[in-house]
Length: 477
Image (cartoon, rainbow, N blue to C red; front, side):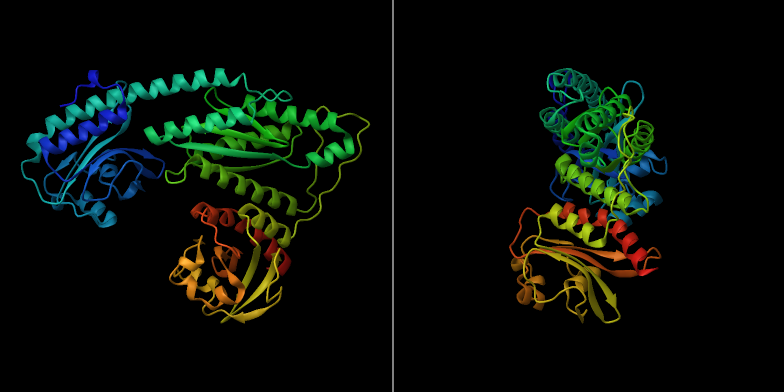
C-alpha cells in the first residue's frame, strides 16, 4: 500500500498506487481519471489490455465512471451484466468488461476530483471483499491531488507576480515573453491534472485605419482602452498579454468552452462600451494538441469572426474613448468577399491553393479559387465529382488532413494527385443552413507538409460558417 506521506508527487503516487492495486486486487486495467468538460482524461494508467495511458481522452458519457458519479450504477460490479447502466456503458465504449469498479476521489471539503477505476475481462464474484483497500487508496490519492491543486493555484499567483516584470510598456499587460511562459506553465498543469484551459485570441479591428486617419496617439489610446477592459474582466489567475501590434491573448485556466464563451460575451460588451471594435476567437485545450494547438484554433476562429464582422453591411470603425474632436469621420470598411476569406485560409495553413467547390449533381464546379501557383483549371471549371478529394472527404474515405499525399494509400492513386501535383491537402465539407451539402472548402500545396495536424482542418471548419454566409448572400439563398 502507498503511504501518502512518503510521496510528494501526485503522478508518481498514482502510478505506484495503480501497480499496487493491480497486484493486490486483480483486474486487468487500472486508471486514475478526471472529467474535463465532455471528456474523461486519464491522469495515470497501468493497463496492458485496453490501451489506456496517461493523456488518453474518451467521451465522458461512454465511461463506467460517469454511471457511478450520476448515481445510476454502484462503485463495484463483480458482474457487469448484472448492472444495466454498466451494460449500456459497455455497449457504448466497446470494452471487453466482465467486472468494473470506480471509486470517487474526494477532497477534504467534499469535492469530487476524479475517479480511481479498474476493469477486468472476467467476472470476479469476490471483488467486493477487496474494495476497502481500493477505497483507502482512492482517499489517499484524493487528499494528495487536492493538495497539489491548491499548490498549483498558489504557483499561478506567484507566476503572475513574476510576469509583472515582463509587461508591454504601452498597455501595462503582459508581453510576448510573459505569454509564452504562461502557456508553457499552464500546459504542464493541464497535462498533469486534467484541468480544462481556454485561450482567447483578440484582435482590434481597424487599428491601421485609426493610425492613418486619426494619428498614432489615438491608436495608442485604443490599445490602452482595450488592455484596460481585459484587465478589469480577468481573474487573478487569468493571463492577459499584448502579443504584438493589435493582437492580445487571454489565458483562462480551469475554464471550459461554456465558461470561455461567457467571458467573451462580457468582454465584447465591455469593449464596445469602451469604443473598441475587436474580433475574438475561443478554443479549449485538447490533450493531443495542447495549448499550442488551442491557440492555433483560437486564432483561426478570430479571423473567422473578423471576416464575419467585415461582411456585414455598414461595418466600420468606431473611434476609441476618449476621442479628439478634430478627428476625421469613421472610414467605412470594404465588404469582404469569398476570395478574401480564401486568402485568410491559405495564409493560415501556409498552402499554395485554397478553393471553394460546389456540388452540381454528379459534377462539381470551382466557385472561387485563390492560388500562388499555376493550375490546369480556373474559377468556373466544371468536372465530374466522382473520384475527387471533395467526394472522398465527404463520404469518409479520405481524412480532412493529409500531410503527405504520396504516403496515403488512397490519395496517392487519385488522378488529381498526379495531374495537379498535390503533395498535402486539407479539406472540409460545406453545408447549407438546412444541413444539405453545398460543396467543400479545401487547401493544398505541391509539397508534403508533415506539420499538418487535425487542428488544421479545424481552421477551415472555423471559417466555413462565415464563408457560407457570404456564399448564400451572393447566391441569393
